[in-house]
Image (cartoon, rainbow, N blue to C red; front, side, top):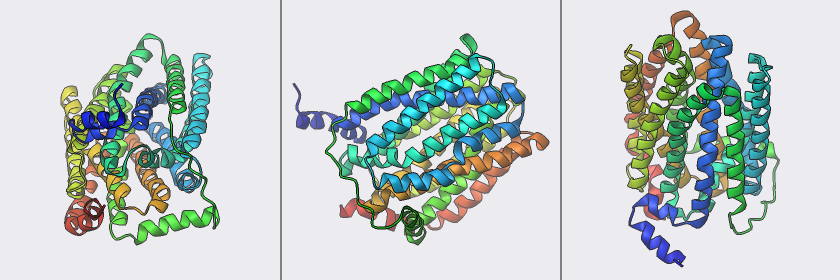
Length: 422
């Protein structure tokens, strides 16, 4: 039987990704998480397509996105404060059980023909609240599953899983919608959660006592925001993330409309466009994971914002379906590189005692931003079409990139210093 040291030596030959997988708990977590994330993307595509079938409205697509992402404004910071106090694995387990029940209810109502846009909105809101509450715990758990020197690669692997699921999940969802109907698609999502719950039960982590609270939960939340705003580099880094989230990221929520109204395709077209985004994102995650080091990530993070914007401009400028899909590969690459590098830099530069709360603000930026942007873009699309709002957002994102690139060196000095000091 191969020992831990031998496994680490074997995995180390494959770069940063291999070093992260030399951690047993991380391997188990990753295996179960793959199924959970594929299920999430299956459900996301199914919700988007069902919304379009029920309403044929870009505004409703934006509202459905807001139901999933806007709860981050309230639940995200609370989840961050809780994550800094309690057992992260148990919190994740409870949230997954609730999400499984939500998927079963959604599937049952759809199969019974009782689903309406309003009910779909409310059930998506439940999904958004639970996910936003749990996200800080799941993100900060990475630092428990791997050694500190493997955090950057582990974050990249987490992104590879998410975007690999973005590639695989929509393809599965498209087939399920066509072959068995959208209702059974939600049932498949519920089944993936069971696999994830089983993997969580196999983790062997040292007991971590709950931290005794010395101040109120509200005080801890405000301390988290104050820490981020005062930090000379984390604050500006998150500002760039907010810009990308509001101005560029909402394109994904409008893809059902693009697939049907712009390119003349059905659920299969939506699956291809979503998978194209996931393919680019997966390539970006693999590249970062193999790179496996923090040095230079500040510049990469800022530049990837430009790449995302250029990909979206190409997507909006074409009537050819496959050119549009290729443009989304570029946009997906830029989107995930930006998100992964931002999270990696935060994981390294943040005070460990503030990590859960800081990552909750990261999650707030990454989730609430697209909701706000999708509401505006979706409403505008009912008057000016789908292309113009996405193109204008991409141009605004380029303006933010131009501001950030002039501050690259000073930000890097703050964010990347911990790698050489640690």
